[in-house]
Image (cartoon, rainbow, N blue to C red):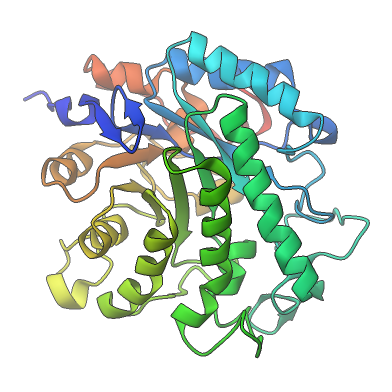
Length: 369
């Protein structure tokens, strides 16, 4: 019996974001923008995903105008000269019938290799993980300048014609370093013993972004429980704690929550609703009432950690995805490595050409397919 994937190709409309289907290209760092400027090859890479029927493209992480906002030298800027290059990208995506938003980012104290910026990295408490010192604790002035830089980047996205902006608040990067008790040891108003207190920085970022872009431009916030320094970390151990974490962010102006987990089919709180219970995106939607994007190993046989070891992954069935979306657990699904290797992935799924779906080959990390 052929799997019916109609649910993936129903239109989505929320807060001025109108998409032809429910498939999102997940942000994936490519590191192929010399001097922080996206090349024509980068523009073509996103254009091909628009041509391949992706409903919404979220760019690789693009960094704000701060001295040490990136942890690799070829991560693209979203300020200065880079904005002209990003205008070329969005124009190509729109011409191909796609919608797109930049993921706006500050990498905080994370480390991605041997490269070091020529100024100290910044983070809430000079930590990249539990007892893992790196860089400098941000001053009050640093914090306010960083909030303003996030807002400016979002305004630039709107002004350049992007359809949405996503703030990266996941995976142990700067915003997430404020959330996490292991990296936020501050005793001032930017820290605290509760997730609500440690969320103040993110809330102020969202408020500033909302003020900069106005009431009608959609804002997505990407969140995760796991961190780059600890895959088992939990910011919210219960639904009640998740409510105290997420509701202030939604009230500040977030329209859609992008809920990152390693495997989308895994339940967030199995002790409450069982092994087939709601995933992170499902609980976030239930708690806040806003639309959610789920993500995590969609269409592949293993999670993203294997890619770091140079391993590939086989294509896998989509029945779990279809079942969960038909149940209304979440609204959109982000596809990462499968789309990185195959720009036509969504188009193939749409016409039921499942035998043509490719797995993930780690060699794709080194090129713009």
